[in-house]
Length: 185
Image 1: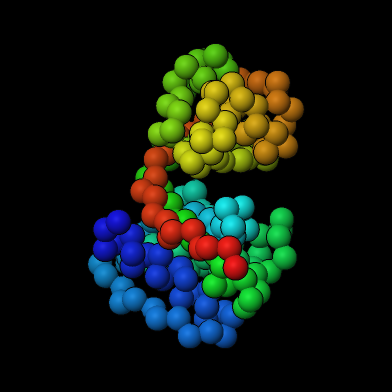
Image 2: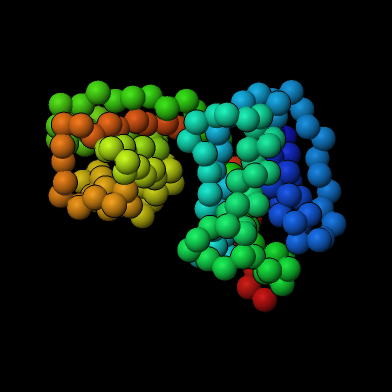
């Protein structure tokens, strides 16, 4: 892992520690941390998802985005109770810094499926007020493009078989950094 990844992970961990009232060494911010960028912070505990929150489009400096998303993943993901001080030493943090979204004009679902790059692309699906994304890491659990798209539609609140010409598909890539998983204690 490069210095950038180590610094961003330390920033995420320090933000969570601070919110828990623990001492966390916050790294110095460097020039790239002041550039606007979008990120996702995923928290794992014993190999299981423990929280994941992020932004799709940049609107604040990367350092602020990482800190905000780290705290949101730890304390505000509606799927989980807030992280506790007892859990903190057991978590592993994964950070994804997103490239800009690229709109993929598609004729139909078959066209969309043929243009997806498993393991490479994160995908955003938008239809009216419905919206969902899967990071590229989700391809590890859903390697088939048709299954990937069906689950993405369901995440957006749409039926798995739904398709409409008004669906907008965007793709992006990530720079991914992660801490080693903690041993079970």
